[in-house]
Length: 253
Image: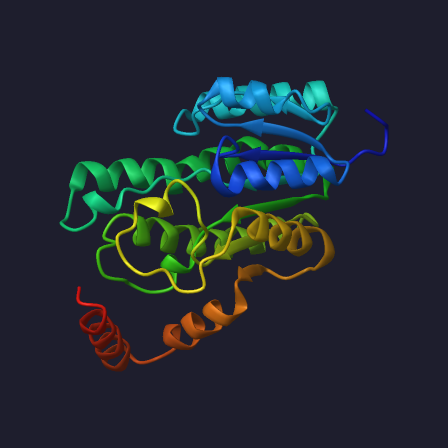
């Protein structure tokens, strides 16, 4: 590892977007610390000399702190964190499932909080760096059959906006990543049409460019879809709900 090599910590790195992003950063010459629950997958990925495995369940607040301290000790610091951990089960979203919703919030929202808290002092003391949080366009506004996942992503958006101001005082950048439909093991469970579906490689390219070559707060893609969702986001409630209802009727849901 060279002295000037950039270092990134990526959670949720054992599959989907997180895995593709980890591989992209490693290919670009970054030193990549990867975390997820599935140790065997992480260890296999770590055969790449630029990748190191740090198994972690982000629900465990104390272990998030311990893991990050191990990372900065072994890598002598971190420049960027990309928090990708997330879960979703569309079969359990058709009705309100309190237990499932609590689990989704634990992973998607509190898991990110645990990781941000773990890195807070490092970045504020360093007075530079970047924390990027993977959210979703599902967090823009309420969507049908998304009583657990959507609110968890809406909470992340609000959280990212909130800590943006706090970290900016320390010259630390905070950004939020809002993908549209990306083909992953999670979205493979969906039983409805997914407009503008893109690959994880496409997502990884957009994320890499967004966090390394721009200063935008939000990195969103694919633009053809996210611009539509952004227009819907600013509509008055009565019109938004009418449009979504009509859309659901069109696809027979």
